[in-house]
Image (tube, rainbow, N blue to C red; front, side):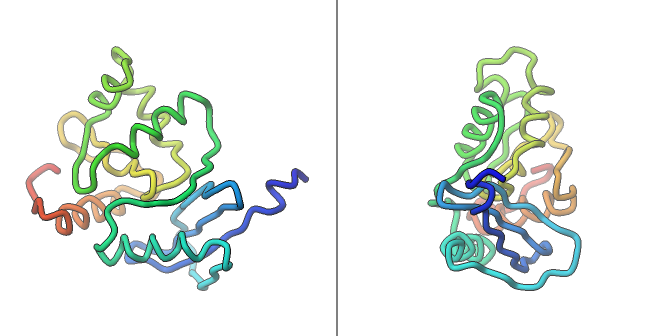
Length: 165
């Protein structure tokens, strides 16, 4: 087994949208995923700062994460995920807008696939990307979580809610 994988640690925490599993190591956070099974709190010391920031997010006091990230993906995926980090808290963009920002003509579907493969939900805010019509589409954690996160951010951003996100 690869030594980096051997040193990969996991934390399990409860959130308002269910159990979250965080994984990471000395190189950074590799994933934040929702799980649909019962959650038993487990926080290794090495992931406590990350957990603290996630808790602050759910308290509505953190709008930007200051963490070392180490997602695993293709160079294109990494470009898309970097661009996701630039979407402001409480705001949304469409897949088409994100595609244009990346310089891709008619690349919304390709961007959507990379967005859907994002392993670090919330911290890399893939939930802030919506369909052109304003419709919520695709979210690995479930559309109900995407809607909850968007409403939560709108409420805490000072922007207020508006129809269609």
